[in-house]
Image (cartoon, rainbow, N blue to C red; front, side, top):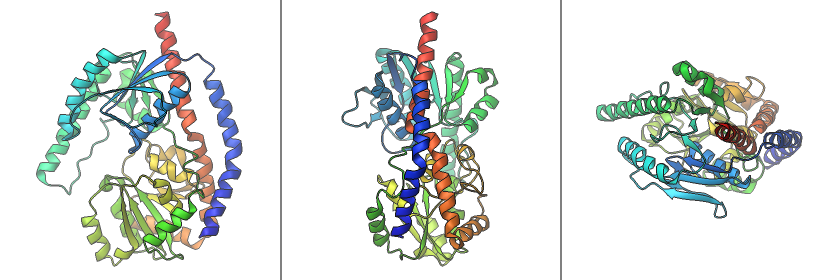
Length: 412
């Protein structure tokens, strides 16, 4: 196992060089235009945990490093101590969602009215002010299936939350009829154009980014070995990783069911959720000892480093940051062809596009178990594909957008 991890690190170093040089040239071209000066980012939360929150944190600090004067207006904001970013807090509850969402829309709008500077960019439909660009991390006219295994009250509340999101999104997009809608993947952009045809000419795609240095594979080998020992996973066992919350939507059940037909594999599960029913499922299948529950972890890089493959049979994604992290870590990917994944994985070359069926997942795990060279080849290609989606390119895309918007504003 140690040899495999070191091999993965060597492969990453060999494949990174040319891609980084190309990325640097592209970023340099993108940064040729003058910065707009001041940017205000408005979001519920900015920080280290959560896909959207991490993207916003990197965007704020990245723009600041480029010389922009960045203001963040949010409920919470966790940035590095040396980040030169101004932060204005919106005080209010975090739960229940409907009350917290509507409270932020009102209180946040007041703070934006008082504190906005320069170009105003919001993370979704979160305030009623007129703004310059709106990040669409999710098109709520598409997303929002109500889980079937909750109580009647919980299902009713989920439907209410979905309705609030959909109405708010429509009103926000209608009010900001000149704002640029910045979608995080081509799949989300297609959804927005389909549901908001009048805004189609204002839709652009700036892909979310991934930390290509933190998720490189082979950099935290000793910690991965320590985690394997802590979980009591024998050295000769293969490990599949599942990372994320909202387990019903993301397909954890079929991933567990697949283990009953993939005897060479253990499954590690990282993310927020209640494992009660799924523990019972694993117990009924006779594989309880092969499923390991890690909970929420800050050191998610170690989880990928321990793994030999990544599994995410999700029914819906907008970008799927965890899939990009796993690919950047050099893992072969088994994922459904949802937004983001379709733009990252080529079936049979950098991973397998699967269905959310246990038999399909088990079949692909069996192929990977029987062919170490296939695991290495797919992992190497996944890393190569992920190199197109670094933080720098994401920040440069927003820089270019804000420069254009500032220039247009200047000439009005």
